[in-house]
Length: 186
Image (cartoon, rainbow, N blue to C red; front, side):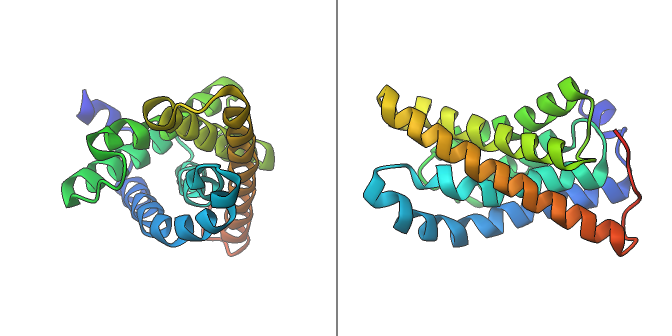
């Protein structure tokens, strides 16, 4: 089953997805403490704000590869690396699920709208889907916020995720302008 899923991707695609997974892991410890300075006094989990800036790697990777399932593979690689190096953070073994769901959400959105990171709108929606799904799952498993703080956290996650998606789109545009990527259409 795994070999059949991975057979759709070229070696270049797999390298890009591994690179995006590693960049997402590397950026997270840099961004989260900065976000905590803003969200801490508001009693909002820092990942809701910071998530858009490390979820953008899922959207960027899906846009570069341009194939359904790319975001899920990136998220799965992130989860496996996190578990393998023992860098559990606050999620422990639940990291497998909390890292995987945002990638699945991006691919689900791309499957529904039949886009693959090819335009500003699908990147924006992919970023929102990744960050909101991750934020809601972490809340469900760990925080269990009451309704009003959950709505505030989810709104923050949507805004941050959307901005991360827009940043991913800008990076895709620059890569295409430099002729490092082919132009894709929906």
